[in-house]
Image 1 (cartoon, rainbow over the protein chains, first blue to last red):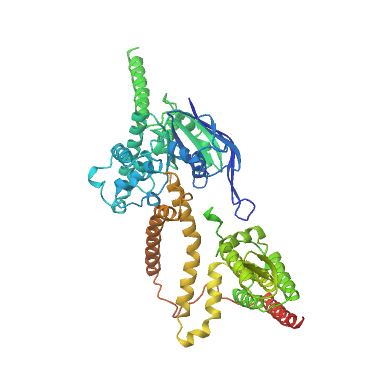
Image 2 (tube, each protein chain N blue to C red):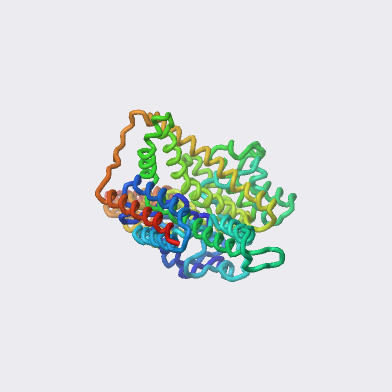
Length: 294
Length: 266
């Protein structure tokens, strides 16, 4: 089912002043239930602005947004409820953690939804388990946690509201490679187990390519490319033109193909590339052997 | 919402006012503020209004942008107007129940509104057309004589410039925190006063934490660059007067004299 439709959405910051910037230019977008989407773009490409439209924090200068068939700009539409359904986790966990303990902090969202103390605690319990934050940290102050743990606590704080879409803004910024992989693996597992739609915002191709089913590339306020990672990486030259790079595997495979090796240039992950190269070499060896026999 | 606060913000534009020496602008604001409380009649009011309108025009700062700053003083404005209206004794103009509005009260209230509005507009023009750096340099130079009296001029102006510089940063930070909490269903608007105050906690705690972190980082960065106060410190761009500054001083003098003379007109 169609979850969300963005129809000719434009957004202009500080209209009619010297600081005026058109952050979104005619965005048209359809998001299906249960999709796993990567949103890629450079700093200032408009990706953060776009996701703030999804839960109604920013109001489009023109255009409409529909969530489950309803126009979110309609008078009387409950935008507070929308924020529970479109869970948005911002880049810096420091901006939302405030309670005395991690557990109490995660309860904040569900309590705002009007749940009882007990139900909120149940939600917090489930959410903290889902993000894989060890139980020993639950009753610590959120300010004592490490960067990666803080991020988990922040994600749990939004997950506890049981959203239908989870939008994560740069969830791996400032984390070391190990922490990054852990968080992304956890998010992928969440997507698998709950079936909710996930939108992952990042400026790094390599990070998201291996997880997502669909990639959106933004540049200067508009959506430049939209498709599966394979389709998007085929345009690696265009990506380069806007200062983004395809995964290194893509370059390797294209170069090998140009040198006349029968590899699949669309391989996006290291595993696929390895299989494709081995296969190509296998074929050549077999052919060589056959020529020797003849 | 919160981004509408324009106090202490700089508005980039290419105008004569922007290029003037900050000392001239400080002087101008001082004269202007005094003149606001000097005029007593409509002729003076017209002169002040023309002066302000002219400067706003030349500064190329959109008027709409400046008016936003007025929202902050709306409450003070309304309250002081009410007090002036009802508590000034004199010839009764209208009577509502036990409250009397006197002719003097109405006149005072009218002037009060105009004075406060002009006060904010005029002084916000200073920060709108002067970068915080320039403003501090100007202050430091203009206040230098106080250094002889052992007033730590450099330190005071440094603190002032840091405070000014941090206003937009903290506003932006507040905006981000607000959004992060709104995304978790926080509600900053509804409820009674106690509930509203309580709902500010999720906003204030992260803001304080971040303000302290930033202060710490800044202190560290200043120390790493061997900052040790004003003694022996030189400027990369020392302030120097140009011809336009001289002209500006003359204009300010003429304006001030004009307002003084109009006081005599009855």
